[in-house]
Image (tube, rainbow, N blue to C red; front, side, top):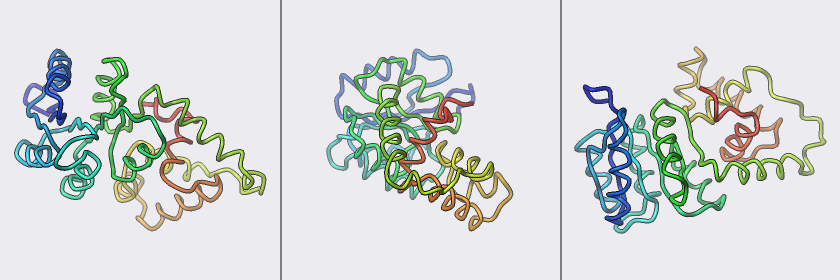
Amino acid sequence: MSMEGKIRIVLAEDHNTVREGIKMLVNAQRDMEVVGEAADGLAAIETTRQLLPDLLVMDISMPELNGLKATEKLRQEFPDLKILTLTRHTDDGYLQQLIKAGVNGYVLKQSAPTELINAIRTVSAGRSYVDSQLTQKVLGGYAARASGPLRGEGKGQPSARESEILRLIAWGYSNKEIASRLDLSVKTVEAHKSNAMRKLNMASRIDIVRYASVQGWLEEE
């Protein structure tokens, strides 16, 4: 954060009018400021390298390099950077790709301005954020998997430790960060994660996010 305690944000959006609107909205908040702008994916990477912001708000559909590819590159170079993505797409495929790429939050462009502001604050605080318009979609997707043929095979419920690890994964922590936080080895964290996913019939991290939504974890402080 800046000397004034504000969240330093780089804004990557190829439409000038949209970018200016978001910039005005963000700069009107007392606890955040836009310190840099970019109109394409390559510029987003270069601007991030130069300014080292706390958080990057990035449109997915941009020229030169799309937001998904830019996220993958930035995540390798800046593992601690908070990345919040903007898109008009509501399908699970996009959400799954973004989570795999390592984004911390996902906001729809068609949502109310307050949604973006809430997302910025949530992600900067170290938690994951999924747009409220997607909540029912996420819950419904998990419910469909949970009621599948494997549900009745008596796999059991995750232990308290396994649930704790799933919660931290859903919040955006890496296995290494979880291991440090809980004073465990990375292998132990991976084992707990694997056991929990097997018990709950989960196939990927998107399922963990869905489960976290069902449990109300994404709304917790």
